[in-house]
Amino acid sequence: MIMAPMTRSRSDPTEHKANELMAQQYSQRASAGLIITECAMVSPKTSAFFAEPGIYEDAQIEGWKKVTDAVHSAGGKIVLQIWHGGRTCPTDYNGQQPVAPSAITNPMPYHSATKGANTQYDEPRALTDDEAKAIVQDFAAAAKRAIAAGFDGIEIHAANGYLINQFLVPQSNKRGSDSHYSGESIETRARFLLEVVDATVAAIGADRVGIRLSPYVSYNAANWAAPETEIPYVASELNKRRIAFIHVMRKDMMNPNADPTLDATPLFRKNFTGAIISNIGFEREEAEKYIEDGKADAVAFGAVFLANPDLVRRFKENRPERNEVNWGTLYLPGAAGYTDYPALE
Image (cartoon, rainbow, N blue to C red):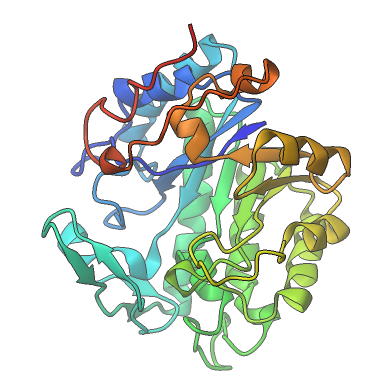
């Protein structure tokens, strides 16, 4: 039973350091079999959520040590999700134009923390191949810092339309055959992802590296072109590298018109012999059967864990009571809707 990664924007928007409030929030949920943290930036000036944390410089290690010490003291395990937002990093947050595989603007709007309104994303600048390779090394350096900060491993965020996902899909990767990361085939579109995996494995070991993928998710124009053939390719390449786990977002959670029968997990299971974590829309009964049937090794819970810090106990005791998520405070600073959700008495 895994706590899924959920951005909550409780860091500071200037230094992007983890803090005591974040340590409290994670330690409250340390009964999870594993906590996967919110995304942490691997490169400076790549904020997509205004006040999310980073792991791009050594000065950020001490803040994360507060989190890992608190979780480990409470008996938990925790890995750091590392990411680059690519074209979803607004200029008004970072003071520079965002970067992406191609100069194609994200078609979705975002709610600007500085403007207080829905805003169109900026047109990104296309990365050179050398710049992309430098970001690969940013991931490796971030992985090393994560281990120095006391994390039990890392999860590479390759889902939901952020930079790695932007390279993976043709709607955001229009690079030609002259690029090492060409958008012309899944083999070339997946190179950036696989190089990030190789670099982090070399940095900290395959047994400490996992990855999150979302083939059917349409958020940020993230959906893969041909999941039926692309999942087997990507999963088999990851299998060669013997990483610890693949974390699958099984469905398109943001699209009310999405086919509810689609589930990306079985194709990953068929082509990957390591641990499979499945996520999106589970409750206890379905999760138990899903694992019993061998479809996944573990299931990750997001919003319900956010609002119920003792969710493991509620599941164990088959308790039906659930705190409702305070959606209005999801990305606001402070303890409200973050560390003040009550546990069972």
